Length: 321
Image (cartoon, rainbow, N blue to C red; front, top):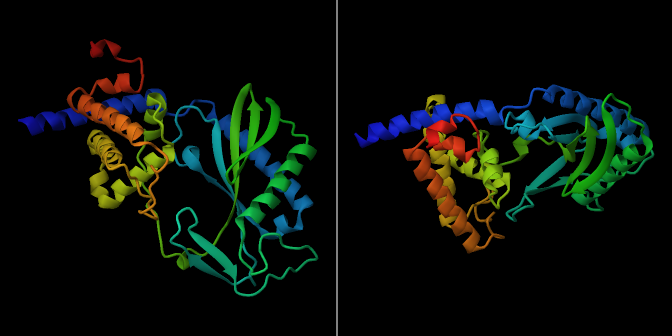
């Protein structure tokens, strides 16, 4: 009897979460116009760099659209875009990959032979030992982006201002379009042969986690929630486990996995499990968040309609009394 009640509640929770997705998580109607301004800026950036830098022209491969928006995980407002600016090594550049056990520094790339350029321009990416140096790549890329912003007059309907900031490896264009600020993170990356890598990541990340974190003001980045999901997928790799009809139960499973990591004061990186992503959070903070997650699990498991209150969706509020 108890199991049948739980199953019924999980089904109701799944139905409620779908309604919440339609009301709150689904993208705003005008997001295609923001995609168009993004493509306009990227095309002009590429044209500028081709004229400005022989190195860029020789090594550029493509723009790779990634992040929440392009992976179907964007929550409501399309105001953040993640773009990998992908470079390739030249055909005559044979290289070695050395994978490391040190966290946050997963591998190094070293040319088998000293880099040679087919044109009279030095290649700024490598050190004297022919190692690819991330700092060199970022510095070179930063100068290109700055030159683009300072020397290009971008004219597009509704485009009011473009300025530059940076955080970590990303160079962020702040685009003021139709009186809304849009962030475009440009990250320089190199494409390599995946066969040379021994480690791997998993590919399935359920929805809703970022929206819940934002509504609850949890003191952890959304990336941590993705890592929790990665571990859950690794624990349950069978696709049948992730059947869409079990949506409500899967959401509770995810919260349970998060609670387990919080109780252990440890969330291992998916590639380097010994590296604790929670290392900068105090035990007090982790315990408080663990208690909150536990309360959410209990509430949603017994009263699925509370999902509307949790996600602050003002529909069917009359059912919450």
